[in-house]
Image (cartoon, rainbow, N blue to C red):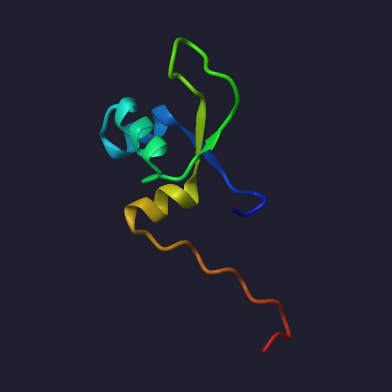
Length: 75
């Protein structure tokens, strides 16, 4: 993950993929989608707050990330 990577919520991810938030959480738990746990469960059992790096969502969708710019003078 890049230092300036953007993270999105489970709800935003579900909306972008047109699936239920429970589906996104199942993918996260199963390791099909990469994400970061943010601490203790909130809002009931099993409601661990997650954030998904945009690069992980792009990887999940099969979208290649933008190549990094090469430094000037590098061969």
